[in-house]
Length: 188
Ligand SMILES: CC(C)(COP(=O)(O)OP(=O)(O)OC[C@H]1O[C@@H](n2cnc3c(N)ncnc32)[C@H](O)[C@@H]1OP(=O)(O)O)[C@@H](O)C(=O)NCCC(=O)NCCS
Image (cartoon, rainbow, N blue to C red; front, side, top):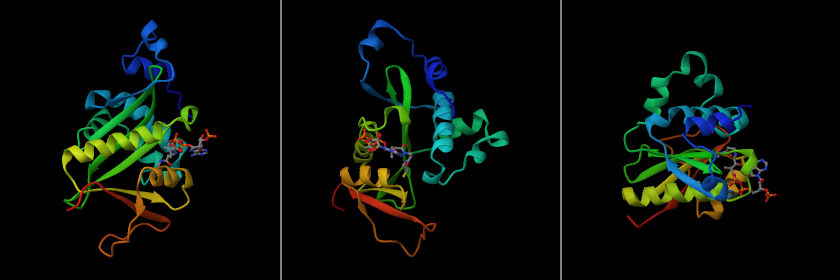
């Protein structure tokens, strides 16, 4: 498994100072721009290695010839998207994205991952809530996501944040073993 600690600190320009030590336990949310591609890459490769069952992308899709600076930068520059990194004690520990999907009245939440070292501390809740806030500011009516039906920790997290299972759409059939969840942000 990829270790984020020192390299993550260095890549994110985060140094162990008295003030970051004093903030031990505090989770900060940072917007990732294309210049943060190295930290995003490390988190994403760690996520794909740790939880292949959770994502459509495969680790191998982003390794070898798929592992290029320009591709990571493009990923962080998708128009109408929002990419967030959770930082704990100066270290990157989680990630999430919000991005446009096929519905004009909705955006999608994806790429959610929290490092095992900090699970169960509310980092997932914070990441989901930040994307929800972004979606509300964008002005869409609905926040959508796709989850594997066996991913009980993720499903529990989404449910306690107000997501419900959505009716399957005939237009956009999902892969076997996955379903869509949605949260209505405002009436259409
Ligand atoms: C889903 C996820 C973000 C939730 O992380 P989180 O918000 O920190 O976790 P929660 O607060 O819901 O955790 C509740 C408890 O379950 C445990 N837990 C959470 N996810 C777990 C997992 N994948 N495996 C085993 N235990 C897990 C936590 O350690 C915690 O235990 P505790 O109460 O004894 O401390 C995280 O499990 C994860 O990154 N999973 C892999 C990627 C993934 O599934 N992404 C979602 C794709 S749709």
